[in-house]
Length: 114
Length: 113
Image (cartoon, rainbow over all chains, first blue to last red; front, side):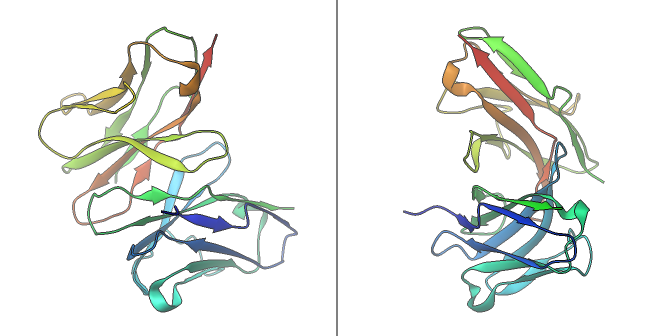
């Protein structure tokens, strides 16, 4: 069974540009989460989808970030326009049911904004 | 608000030595506790978790952690480490009613031969 996959693995862009990160959860997992780790700091929750609906988006930093999950399968996270402080590793995770079942994480996308 | 503190950013240790990675949390409500591990170039993997019941939980590869409510700690231990345990370890907290996890800043465990 394939795990959570994320694309691209690395992205280097200039300030002001747009970047779209993609996450493919494990097949059949209704719950999808985005997290971010800024260099040297903790991994922070961004948002949680249940199927195509945003269940909790309390961690989204500002309106430059837009997450979608059309059809309840893969998800995209768009940053527009990117700022220097957006640099970090963006992790996606998925789980089969709500509550404290294991969240399966992808390898992350390393975003560098110059 | 919840927070997780991992005081040690790096822990160097020789192979076959014991290790303890510390984790303290702050929360005013009942919590669930997790340790995740990230091996080089891989995603985070769940190592072990405490949801309820026995305060001592174990992983399949010899790690264990003990939930200590009075000290608000969930330290990770292994009596004898291997080179393959070299990785970054993250402590995380969750609470009832929300799926989001609150992570610590991570501890890099470096095992030397």
